[in-house]
Image (cartoon, rainbow, N blue to C red; front, side, top):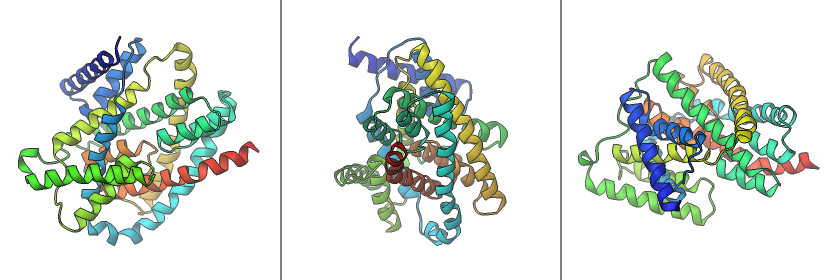
Length: 341
């Protein structure tokens, strides 16, 4: 089976997932539909193919969407955010202290695999660090994919069926209603921001580069809208199937060990993050919806999507996730080497 055929099959399965979720009136069909479809296909032994370059391109749309959501009001609220932002290092530390012994002692993973599986950072960064340290890349990939899958599935279900938050609202205006010059400017900001951030070695370049540049244009008044709704739906689609494709070629042994370990870890850190969010909300440090999203240890892109669709303050939410990811990327290799000694 050629790579082109596998990619076409993957996209077709993802579209079926979108259709099923839409017909069943389930939340976030463009994100969860592809994820569920690819996961189901992988469990049935169908070999899937991702599109990393296209997925990175789609992540630039989210970066622009986040940047254009940042207004001067967010900077006026920085003093309010300081305490909740200061909680992120403690939350990250506790997640690591819970996750590492869980993987090491309960499931018997080696030191490097257990350590980088427990670190709630960006997937690609943790895989690179883990491989350099001698960890099992496939196990780490499945564990982190499961973490993102569980968090990204649980939160929309909680929002839709428990908190009755409307997740069906469009994340932006249709492209026909946006000024053409803004659409073209947003496209340029996305590409230039991504490639510029990539050249200087900024982590998460495909999101953070466009986000930073879009913030500048938004604050200057040159961009007054988010990217078109169709573009944000496309970004959701590719992010969803990128997570689902991680399970392609999975064996029963990997399912029994790596995925089960990821599920157990996800439950543990969901409890920990819920306690932090509950305390911060009860103390009035964060608004309710933003608190749930800011402290949830999902992927940065996925949390940005949820914030956009749920109508939360996207800049507030993403600021907390950036702090978490920066901490993990900067400190985790140093701590891992000292632990190994």
